[in-house]
Image (tube, rainbow, N blue to C red; front, side, top):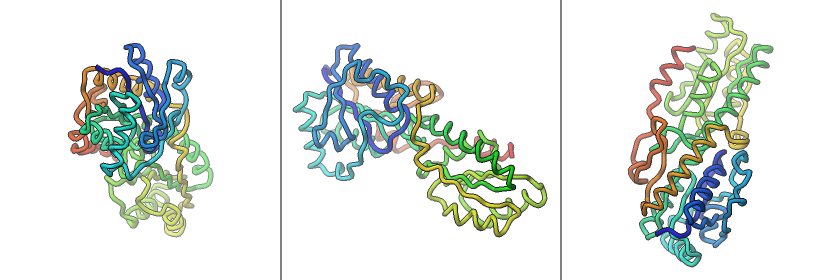
Length: 320
């Protein structure tokens, strides 16, 4: 029987994490289970930075971005000695089970603890939407809204000055944020790990848009870690009829009040996590597939290929 559940957020923060913490706390308390918040992710687990959570602890947290528990990276958590120290801290505090909100690295930590006797459930918290086993992650929708708002504003000034705005968005090695932004904003080009990058092809297409189509502006959405967007913007200015300008949205994409979609998703996932732990289930992660909240073993999820977005790329091509 589960008497006390711990909850932590790990890796990069994402809007909606607080909604997930709130859901875990409220659902557990309503079932007579105590909840302990662990500060600064796995590092807090190692340092014993624990705080008992009450209903009021999570009041007014739904609309707040970031994570009220804080987050930090702990690469040395891979070491068995560190894991054993964390297990000892959990047992000393009477924590029977754990909810981990974060990315795939956080999932691996949750799986390691489960194998050592502490049931853990993983919730996908990242703006990158790069976690297998779920259609969408907590924070993706909010980050998308931020990207769309920024690109819409850039379009106004690009049109006024005959510019090509090259906008770099986050995503790690997943192109979802760029693809969804490009479709939502009516961009002329999208460059992601899935599309590949051919600089000559990019410049040739922009020349065609400027000279043959005589467009007043162009928007190019590109995923991070593909190329130097400032250098690309200079080449656009030198080789096409557009004035190239690069904009890196950066960490502004992580912040802000979560959208209703992310609040709902986080709340539904948090409830599912507590239900699984009450059933004595660990080593699983929660996801949403075809709008249904699901769960599967973490190792199975991590072994799955990421979502195939061929249909959405085809849609983008047909909308240009």
